Amino acid sequence: MGDSTRVKVGIVGASGYGGVQLVRLIADHPHLELVYVGGESSAGKAFSDLYPHMDLATNLTIETVDPETIGDRCDVVFLSLPNGLAWKMTPTLLDKGCKVLDLSADYRFSNLDTYQAWYGGDRTDKEVAATAVYGLPELYRDRIKDAQLVGCPGCYPTASLLALAPLLKQGMIVPESAIIDAKSGTSGGGRKAKVNLLLAEADNSFAAYGVASHRHTPEIEQICSDLAGHEVLVQFTPHLIPMVRGILSTVYANLRDPGLVREDLVTIYTAFYRNCPWVKVLPAGVYPQTKWAMGSNMCYLGVEIDQRTDRAIVMSGIDNLLKGQAGQAIQCLNLMMDWDETLGLPQLGFYP
Ligand SMILES: NC(=O)C1=CN([C@@H]2O[C@H](COP(=O)(O)OP(=O)(O)OC[C@H]3O[C@@H](n4cnc5c(N)ncnc54)[C@H](OP(=O)(O)O)[C@@H]3O)[C@@H](O)[C@H]2O)C=CC1
Ligand SMILES: CC(=O)N[C@@H](CCC(=O)OP(=O)(O)O)C(=O)O
Image (cartoon, rainbow, N blue to C red):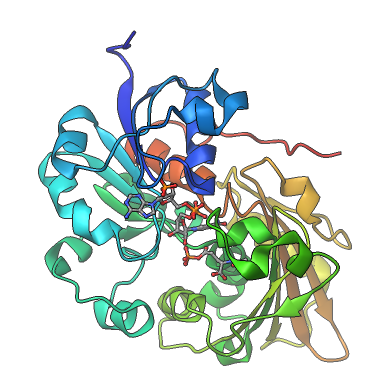
């Protein structure tokens, strides 16, 4: 039975990894009621037939995607789809008065030419895209509060930008010297079958991919440029690591002030993130482990300085499906609804 006091929520792409996390988080959220789940190949199946252990979270059946009817039934819609689909349905959802949170790359770029150069597609929603806000609350909280459309960041950009932001914003590093070395578990590639994500391919192996060409590079550069106040290029190398969940992003950059020690960085980072409940700056000498963040919306940051090279080294650990995806989307929605930013989100991870 429906609860008229709760905000009615729909998820398009509910069967995927991001969608499942959203179902779980919405079930635990005090102000949200899931009223619609949509998909393509899973349409017509009960959500609990796909995920039998989640029958307590919802008894909905996955439906086909018709933006008009979704817009009539929902106040808020999460789009957890492959890149290039959200922009085709978002204008209708917004016209219907919905708040829209897109987990794909479609609304992350302030310059659509950049989007089209990396993702393709012939966008016809330029006016709508211009209203989208980049959904990284620690950097754009006030803009997210007023947004009707949020483009939630990618998992690698979330981890990497939270590591770099204090240094860039305060002009402490040479921006172009930034090198981002990031590792992701296989769930980062989504639930759809892909040969490189098979256990027999990914297990006992560890390799870089997308070297000097990964599509998260321009997304990271866009926000770094915004923080630095001028155009910045960065070096970003992702790796696939044989685990399911988690990202560890290690960022290196040349310091402008060679006199700093790591305790200074702890103080600077703690001050920068003092109003951010989802970032935990670790004490000097403590470095994040991905398992701490598994099941939690927290980003753990460890800071270090190599005094031989005068480089800052910052390590950022997140759960790619929570702070890197669905958790961050709920965090953004909390802000858009003027609710506490922590509502309905898990603080502590599953481990140990
Ligand atoms: N995985 C991660 O760590 C992160 C992913 N992202 C982004 O979030 C988005 C979702 O990712 P993820 O959950 O991993 O993806 P999955 O591959 O796990 O899920 C994709 C979902 O999209 C649905 N879908 C695909 N095509 C269509 C279509 N034409 N119409 C309707 N539904 C469709 C699928 O439904 P069905 O099963 O019914 O076919 C499925 O539910 C992507 O844009 C991804 O890049 C962002 C940050 C992190
Ligand atoms: C391990 C793995 O394959 N990771 C994905 C990142 C997924 C993601 O967040 O990307 P978008 O939302 O920008 O598509 C990749 O490198 O393509």
